[in-house]
Amino acid sequence: GENVEQHPSTLSVQEGDSAVIKCTYSDSASNYFPWYKQELGKRPQLIIDIRSNVGEKKDQRIAVTLNKTAKHFSLHITETQPEDSAVYFCAASKSGAGANSKLTFGKGITLSVRP
Amino acid sequence: NAGVTQTPKFRVLKTGQSMTLLCAQDMNHEYMYWYRQDPGMGLRLIHYSVGEGTTAKGEVPDGYNVSRLKKQNFLLGLESAAPSQTSVYFCASRNPGQETQYFGPGTRLLVL
Image 1 (spheres, one colour):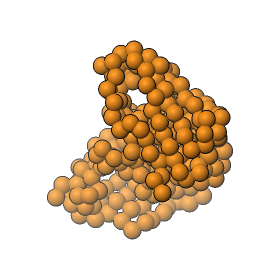
Image 2 (cartoon, rainbow over the protein chains, first blue to last red):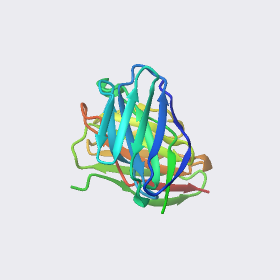
Image 3 (cartoon, chains in turn purple, blue):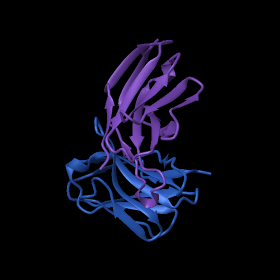
Protein backbone atom coordinates (compact mmCIF):
# COMPACT_ATOMS: atom_id res chain seq x y z
CA GLY A 1 0.00 0.00 0.00
CA GLU A 2 0.84 3.66 -0.09
CA ASN A 3 3.28 5.10 2.44
CA VAL A 4 3.43 8.85 2.99
CA GLU A 5 6.20 10.43 5.02
CA GLN A 6 6.53 14.01 6.20
CA HIS A 7 9.66 15.77 7.28
CA PRO A 8 10.57 17.55 9.43
CA SER A 9 8.13 16.69 12.24
CA THR A 10 8.30 20.18 13.69
CA LEU A 11 9.16 23.49 12.12
CA SER A 12 9.57 26.88 13.73
CA VAL A 13 9.84 30.07 11.70
CA GLN A 14 9.87 33.77 12.39
CA GLU A 15 6.76 35.70 11.43
CA GLY A 16 7.12 36.95 7.89
CA ASP A 17 9.52 34.22 6.83
CA SER A 18 8.63 31.39 4.46
CA ALA A 19 7.96 27.81 5.52
CA VAL A 20 8.42 24.71 3.39
CA ILE A 21 7.02 21.33 4.39
CA LYS A 22 7.95 18.26 2.37
CA CYS A 23 6.25 14.93 1.86
CA THR A 24 7.30 11.80 0.03
CA TYR A 25 5.06 9.02 -1.22
CA SER A 26 5.78 5.48 -2.32
CA ASP A 27 3.08 4.48 -4.81
CA SER A 28 3.78 5.87 -8.27
CA ALA A 29 0.09 5.34 -9.14
CA SER A 30 -1.00 8.00 -6.64
CA ASN A 31 -2.23 11.07 -8.46
CA TYR A 32 -4.00 13.27 -5.94
CA PHE A 33 -2.15 15.10 -3.16
CA PRO A 34 -4.06 17.27 -0.67
CA TRP A 35 -2.78 19.27 2.28
CA TYR A 36 -4.86 19.60 5.43
CA LYS A 37 -4.41 22.12 8.22
CA GLN A 38 -5.49 21.27 11.75
CA GLU A 39 -5.59 23.92 14.43
CA LEU A 40 -5.42 22.83 18.04
CA GLY A 41 -8.59 21.01 19.05
CA LYS A 42 -10.19 21.48 15.63
CA ARG A 43 -10.95 19.29 12.64
CA PRO A 44 -8.56 18.90 9.68
CA GLN A 45 -9.46 21.25 6.83
CA LEU A 46 -8.29 21.15 3.25
CA ILE A 47 -6.14 24.14 2.35
CA ILE A 48 -4.81 23.18 -1.07
CA ASP A 49 -4.47 20.15 -3.31
CA ILE A 50 -2.69 19.16 -6.49
CA ARG A 51 -3.15 16.50 -9.12
CA SER A 52 -0.39 14.67 -10.90
CA ASN A 53 -0.97 16.43 -14.21
CA VAL A 54 0.06 19.74 -12.63
CA GLY A 55 3.51 20.69 -11.30
CA GLU A 56 2.54 23.64 -9.15
CA LYS A 57 -0.56 25.29 -7.74
CA LYS A 58 -0.89 28.57 -5.86
CA ASP A 59 -3.55 30.11 -3.68
CA GLN A 60 -2.54 33.47 -2.23
CA ARG A 61 0.27 32.79 0.28
CA ILE A 62 0.11 29.03 -0.15
CA ALA A 63 1.58 26.94 -2.94
CA VAL A 64 2.13 23.26 -3.54
CA THR A 65 4.71 21.74 -5.86
CA LEU A 66 4.88 18.18 -7.11
CA ASN A 67 7.84 16.19 -8.39
CA LYS A 68 6.44 12.93 -9.78
CA THR A 69 9.85 11.55 -10.71
CA ALA A 70 11.17 11.88 -7.19
CA LYS A 71 7.75 11.14 -5.69
CA HIS A 72 7.65 14.10 -3.40
CA PHE A 73 5.49 17.18 -2.99
CA SER A 74 5.91 20.27 -0.87
CA LEU A 75 3.77 22.93 0.78
CA HIS A 76 5.13 26.46 0.63
CA ILE A 77 3.77 29.19 2.88
CA THR A 78 5.07 32.71 2.29
CA GLU A 79 4.89 35.71 4.66
CA THR A 80 3.96 33.45 7.57
CA GLN A 81 1.62 34.77 10.23
CA PRO A 82 0.91 33.55 13.78
CA GLU A 83 -2.42 32.13 12.61
CA ASP A 84 -0.49 29.78 10.33
CA SER A 85 0.63 27.92 13.46
CA ALA A 86 -1.01 24.48 13.24
CA VAL A 87 -0.41 20.86 12.34
CA TYR A 88 -0.19 20.26 8.61
CA PHE A 89 -0.95 16.87 7.09
CA CYS A 90 -0.12 15.77 3.59
CA ALA A 91 -1.90 12.86 1.96
CA ALA A 92 -1.96 10.86 -1.23
CA SER A 93 -4.54 8.82 -3.10
CA LYS A 94 -5.38 7.37 -6.49
CA SER A 95 -8.06 9.70 -7.76
CA GLY A 96 -10.53 8.06 -10.09
CA ALA A 97 -10.22 4.69 -8.45
CA GLY A 98 -13.74 5.03 -7.09
CA ALA A 99 -14.20 3.20 -3.84
CA ASN A 100 -10.51 2.37 -3.74
CA SER A 101 -9.55 6.03 -3.77
CA LYS A 102 -8.61 6.28 -0.10
CA LEU A 103 -6.37 8.92 1.39
CA THR A 104 -3.15 7.85 3.10
CA PHE A 105 -1.99 10.56 5.48
CA GLY A 106 1.45 11.51 6.65
CA LYS A 107 2.06 11.81 10.38
CA GLY A 108 1.80 15.58 10.40
CA ILE A 109 4.13 18.49 10.95
CA THR A 110 3.69 21.06 13.70
CA LEU A 111 4.42 24.54 12.37
CA SER A 112 5.08 27.27 14.91
CA VAL A 113 5.27 30.88 13.76
CA ARG A 114 7.13 33.06 16.25
CA PRO A 115 5.80 36.63 16.53
CA ASN B 1 -26.20 23.16 6.37
CA ALA B 2 -24.43 21.54 9.31
CA GLY B 3 -21.95 19.56 7.20
CA VAL B 4 -20.48 16.64 9.14
CA THR B 5 -21.41 16.29 12.80
CA GLN B 6 -20.26 13.79 15.41
CA THR B 7 -21.81 12.63 18.65
CA PRO B 8 -20.61 12.63 21.40
CA LYS B 9 -17.83 15.24 21.62
CA PHE B 10 -16.12 13.54 24.55
CA ARG B 11 -16.56 10.27 26.40
CA VAL B 12 -14.82 8.35 29.15
CA LEU B 13 -15.17 4.58 29.17
CA LYS B 14 -13.95 1.84 31.43
CA THR B 15 -12.11 -1.10 29.91
CA GLY B 16 -14.61 -3.62 28.59
CA GLN B 17 -17.48 -1.19 28.15
CA SER B 18 -19.11 -0.67 24.79
CA MET B 19 -20.21 2.43 22.97
CA THR B 20 -21.26 3.76 19.60
CA LEU B 21 -20.01 6.91 17.94
CA LEU B 22 -22.38 8.58 15.52
CA CYS B 23 -21.40 10.48 12.40
CA ALA B 24 -24.05 12.34 10.43
CA GLN B 25 -23.74 14.36 7.22
CA ASP B 26 -26.30 16.45 5.40
CA MET B 27 -24.39 16.85 2.13
CA ASN B 28 -25.83 13.71 0.52
CA HIS B 29 -22.34 12.21 0.29
CA GLU B 30 -21.97 8.61 -0.82
CA TYR B 31 -18.64 7.86 0.83
CA MET B 32 -18.00 8.05 4.56
CA TYR B 33 -14.89 7.31 6.60
CA TRP B 34 -13.82 6.76 10.19
CA TYR B 35 -10.29 7.73 11.22
CA ARG B 36 -8.44 7.70 14.48
CA GLN B 37 -5.81 10.28 15.33
CA ASP B 38 -3.07 9.55 17.82
CA PRO B 39 -0.09 11.76 18.70
CA GLY B 40 2.68 11.36 16.15
CA MET B 41 0.65 8.89 14.10
CA GLY B 42 -1.39 11.11 11.83
CA LEU B 43 -4.83 10.01 10.69
CA ARG B 44 -5.37 6.29 10.20
CA LEU B 45 -8.37 4.83 8.45
CA ILE B 46 -10.45 2.43 10.55
CA HIS B 47 -13.41 1.57 8.30
CA TYR B 48 -15.16 3.20 5.41
CA SER B 49 -18.39 2.95 3.44
CA VAL B 50 -19.07 3.61 -0.21
CA GLY B 51 -22.83 3.62 0.14
CA GLU B 52 -25.82 2.75 2.25
CA GLY B 53 -25.59 -0.82 3.46
CA THR B 54 -21.91 -1.26 2.55
CA THR B 55 -18.81 -1.15 4.75
CA ALA B 56 -15.15 -2.07 4.32
CA LYS B 57 -12.04 -2.37 6.46
CA GLY B 58 -9.36 0.27 6.48
CA GLU B 59 -5.85 0.24 7.87
CA VAL B 60 -6.65 -0.36 11.57
CA PRO B 61 -10.06 -2.11 11.80
CA ASP B 62 -9.46 -4.49 14.73
CA GLY B 63 -11.68 -3.87 17.76
CA TYR B 64 -14.19 -1.77 15.81
CA ASN B 65 -17.39 -2.44 13.91
CA VAL B 66 -19.38 -0.11 11.70
CA SER B 67 -22.80 0.18 10.15
CA ARG B 68 -24.30 2.36 7.43
CA LEU B 69 -28.04 1.72 7.64
CA LYS B 70 -28.88 5.20 6.34
CA LYS B 71 -26.96 7.16 3.76
CA GLN B 72 -26.49 10.13 6.04
CA ASN B 73 -25.27 8.19 9.09
CA PHE B 74 -22.15 6.14 9.74
CA LEU B 75 -21.83 4.46 13.13
CA LEU B 76 -18.61 3.27 14.73
CA GLY B 77 -18.93 0.71 17.50
CA LEU B 78 -16.53 -0.46 20.16
CA GLU B 79 -17.81 -3.73 21.60
CA SER B 80 -15.25 -4.05 24.40
CA ALA B 81 -13.19 -0.92 24.82
CA ALA B 82 -9.46 -1.17 25.53
CA PRO B 83 -7.02 1.54 26.71
CA SER B 84 -5.31 1.28 23.29
CA GLN B 85 -8.49 2.73 21.79
CA THR B 86 -8.00 6.00 23.61
CA SER B 87 -7.85 8.42 20.73
CA VAL B 88 -9.57 11.19 18.85
CA TYR B 89 -11.97 9.84 16.26
CA PHE B 90 -12.80 11.76 13.12
CA CYS B 91 -15.48 11.04 10.60
CA ALA B 92 -15.27 12.33 7.04
CA SER B 93 -17.38 12.19 3.91
CA ARG B 94 -17.19 12.96 0.21
CA ASN B 95 -18.85 12.15 -3.09
CA PRO B 96 -17.44 9.99 -5.88
CA GLY B 97 -15.49 12.11 -8.32
CA GLN B 98 -14.88 14.81 -5.72
CA GLU B 99 -11.68 14.11 -3.86
CA THR B 100 -12.10 16.59 -1.01
CA GLN B 101 -13.01 14.91 2.26
CA TYR B 102 -15.01 16.95 4.75
CA PHE B 103 -14.26 16.17 8.36
CA GLY B 104 -16.44 16.24 11.42
CA PRO B 105 -15.34 18.00 14.64
CA GLY B 106 -14.07 14.80 16.25
CA THR B 107 -14.87 12.68 19.28
CA ARG B 108 -12.33 12.46 22.05
CA LEU B 109 -12.46 9.04 23.72
CA LEU B 110 -10.64 8.08 26.88
CA VAL B 111 -10.61 4.44 27.93
CA LEU B 112 -9.49 3.81 31.50
